[in-house]
Length: 204
Image (cartoon, rainbow, N blue to C red):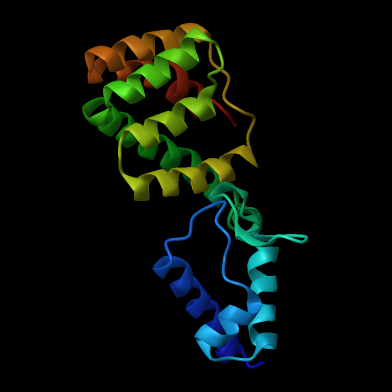
């Protein structure tokens, strides 16, 4: 199979995934069905599916079929990170970009958070099941900007593969919960600066 046909087959499979509205956990069409819909040989489809599985975009379950995987599990992120973050300047830029993005997400979440999302945050704090990654995942979801959420997840995966996890006291989340309840953006950004931005800026 030529590289052109290979890329076209991948693009067409991606189009089918979009058209069918497939998300993580959904079963994708069989190899035979994809071959018929795309009007290409099954060998071409098979190779394209192998590439998608290698990248962690899909997974084959023996006896069940092939399914979409969660975005954060894609091995492509790790592969890209290996090359992108070789230089120290890139690592510094990663921290700065992540901080700037999280500040924006915090502002959106403060403005747009629903009562349902607020109750969800309070429950995690009350049960002490919250950590920084879960908190920011909540923030990006509460901000209701799907693209920013996806970008944050990629940056966060890069970050966690190169730095220690951010660990914060429960009081940080309790104070954040109160600030989100009152929609006090100044308090939210002050807490973020004190507990996240300043410690990160001191890292080598």
